[in-house]
Image (cartoon, rainbow, N blue to C red; front, top):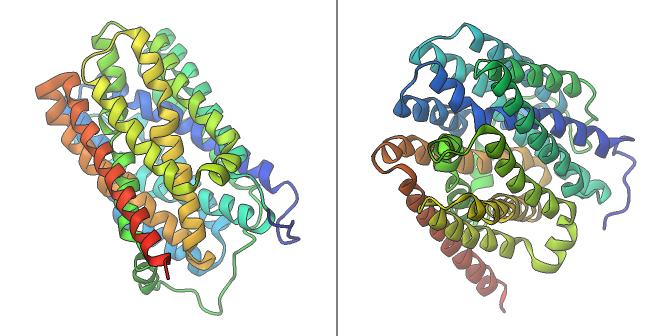
Length: 394
């Protein structure tokens, strides 16, 4: 463990944890329930998939550019505040959007802001891990707890006031995110250069880190395998007769499993290794989505949802620690953005866009395609581990 660093501000971990809490109040409402709001607005399944996928494609370009600017400025906190303000404006405009194209345009505006928030928050958190030996999982788990709370709050609001309440909850979460962003700690690894500018070579240099493209394929495939679940999971459960309360409960089971892993992430990484955590996530994705393709009953959905602790949690923690070890701190935000661009942009975007017609044609059987992505991620990570081991041998 690293010795405490005076450059890390007092209360660093607490303020980062509070920001995760606010950020995931939005995510915990948007991810499961925005498709219900879109359906309530009259959008077809293919349009819902397009609106859900479009922001993911935006991340491919916007994420790295925003991260490069933040690295160049040397003040990632200031970038977070600006993005949180723009995100709140976009969420407010959703109230005025009707029809596919207006909703799509407003969603893209909001996504332009939010696409940089998570990578920059992760960069701040990991700088505390490197500088002061802080436990990433203990900070991040508060976001998962708020994700669960948001799901139950949204489910209750939908029962009481209908799907239209979803946007009001998103606005409330966005306002809290901006408020907390204003009290975030200074970046302990931030350095203000003599002249800030946009240096595209940073992306090239980061991408050329040994085995980084193969790592992105592995992590991207595993995280992209969630596309059908994220877009149509609640709608599919409704088709099976599962009400909003049980839908929130099933989401909560997955996130509780994720929290349990986050709580002991430092020990798990030390004992298992970051690379094997990614492998575990891929194998779990293969099992989870194969089973989901057969419309499992409620009793079977409980353990399948618990696998979210591996399909998302283990894969995500493993990926962050792999990057922390292999990418220089000065390029950390760029690496985080490239990771987000591939996992939540190219990969998840394509998978989400394709999930619309696949789900329309096959219903719950669309999960079988996601199982294939889990297998691809597993194989890519095993190849990466073998190459790294061979390269280290004399």
